Length: 390
Image (cartoon, rainbow, N blue to C red; front, side, top):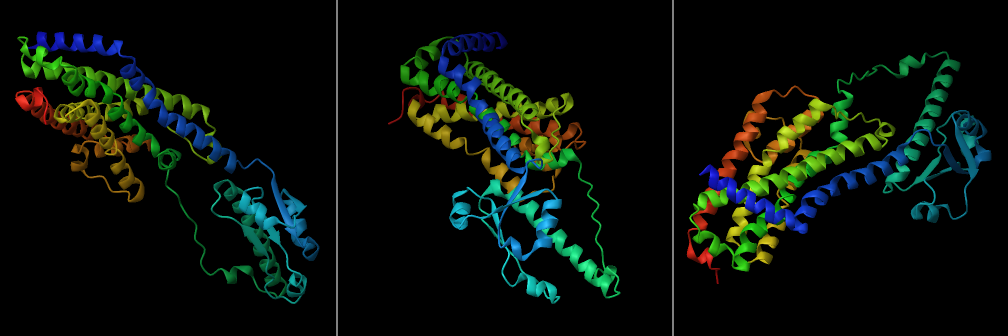
């Protein structure tokens, strides 16, 4: 039995390594995630980089000289706002404009609340850093004036703050990074499904469409050995895809200026090995499931359609974890796909996971893969599958 499986495996590997489409899919398909990651976080780092100058266009700056002096002392560069500032903000040419009304000085000298307007477009991500920094300066100026007014009246500013909240944040930089980099588990799981997809389609639906499946089954090879050999080929290419995706993320994470976002990613050797140990077992289930669907499909195109829809499966647990984080329970680690995304996230946060979650993840994927392989073997015993279905 082992010799037969090895023979089929060598035959399939030789055939598919000659197929450039299968090889390109396994090598370059997983690069989509790291490329998206690199572009997105490089742009975000440029938007939120604190070192860039804070330019503030102002309307009516002559009405608030002390406020203007305060902003300049804290690094802001003041300019005259153009007449069409609203259109420029909507077009993305300006981040924010500060408007000081003509009655600002009167309200200020009489001790009343003096209002200013901050014109922004909060739908633009690249403007948020400027808006946040400018709003912090305005709030700081307001707090400074409030304290000074209380001192002049002989009142301690502490009376206006009966309760002070000091936040003690126990989150480590690695845990904060895991929240920001939550797309990495999704793309690693996606690579496990994408890497062997073309091989799974070609090795079952493709061979039947070409008429080579029937002669192959006539040979003295057990159907179980045939399925196992083809499955191992798909698993190998899916594993290559996961490894390529992981290596690409390692390269990108060290190239992208995440420190400008206040993110410290944990990608040392134990973390990388932990993520691979979590995701690689998923290739067993993904490959077996894709082979089952390809065997059942009527044609190559039909199998391709079904498996492209199946690629949505890795996204569902990722959306659940992103929108509604859950407290992990032992039984969750036995659910394929969900377990892998949960485990990779915990490894990235630097949590002490232990061996049991990895074993449960492996057992869950192995059981699901065994079921799919058994059903595939049974389908190969039906004439309507081998000779095509109407």
